[in-house]
Structure formats: C-alpha cells, structure tokens
Image 1 (spheres, rainbow, N blue to C red):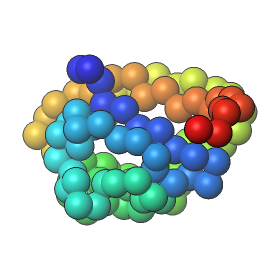
Image 2: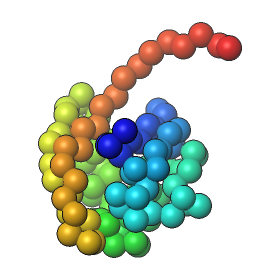
Image 3: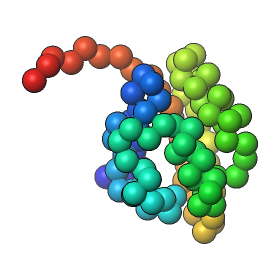
Image 4: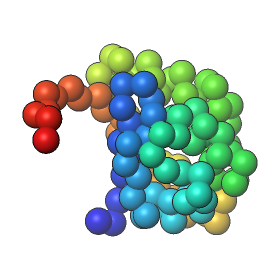
Length: 99
C-alpha cells in the first residue's frame, strides 16, 4: 500500500497504523502504536517536525469534521519538503461478530 493509513476507535485511540504512515512523517514506531491517543499522535508529529500549527485546534477541527461526516482534502508538507495530499477523516460504524 502506498498510502499512509491510520484507524482510530470511538475513543480516539489508535487501532492500526501502517509503516508507510510512520515513514511518511518520520515518526517513532515506539510511540506510534495501538492505544495512542489522536492528540498525542499529532503532538508527536509536532515534536518531530512533521506538523506545523496548533495541536489542540487541529485535533478539534478534525474531530468536528468527523462528527459532521465531512471529508476533507488537503496537502501536508513534511519537514523534508515532501507533499502528502488528501487527508480524509471519516467515521464509520459497523457491527462485527465476536471471534
């Protein structure tokens, strides 16, 4: 998969993150792992130089858009100048059978 992928649960805790996402933003796999809070991920990105902006404002905006069911399109420039397009937060609910 060429895209970076994150999946969060309803408590904004990381469930899945692929290696591509970690590499795209130069993040630590020791930090970015299941259970990490969404805000803490954005704060980690800021600390590593791949996020410029107000962490709390960004998190609030993303969560508001997810609640409204909005899909956003944007381009994120990383510290090394790489452009990563199309952030698309989405909320989806599904019933899954227990194993």
